[in-house]
Image (cartoon, helix red, strand yellow):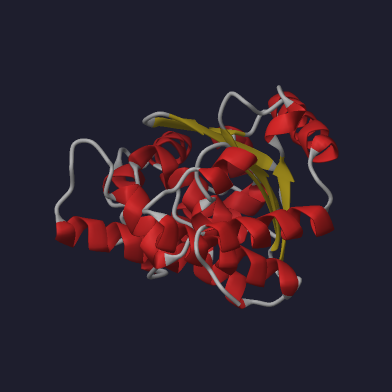
Length: 264
């Protein structure tokens, strides 16, 4: 984003005679979050901007003139998307769909085309482009570290049909084989597990506490309460402990891709 917003924001903080830490305390945010906004690396959420306006006595300027962002995502996911960009480690759990940053274009289109109310082809194209842009964080061969725990249903549900699934699972296999991503499968035979209630993403950073993001039908929430994040991390760790080891998970994915019609 343009840094004019961040520069103006910094000027308002200095004019108010506040340090980053003092403003962070007044707005109930972290100092590093303030620093990221000033440097142009992060756009504040609408709620963050309202708290900053109140702390700086700037009326509603910060919340009214947030920088434009062309990304097409659900409103409830926007805060998580901005945090995803800054994470040094991302741990995903998927109950029904392959996590967004690991999706192929055809798989993403199949998922997004089922939305309600229905979207036109042009809007679906925008949504797919945004999802593929998110996956570009994997272009760096090292950071962020990405782990994914997939319920076996993710592999068995034929999203988009056999060809789309074969391509998608082969893509996952490739990411695992290169060492870029770790994928562990929670098999049906396990029965109940700690993450059956929905999708979960855990985000870790270099300079701020970890956060979690959970999502259900038409709703998503960023959790930054240390106690809640700790509980969700614990549930993830339990599920990961029950999942198939990496080697066995890889073998299952290869076999499933073959079942869908992929041939080496």
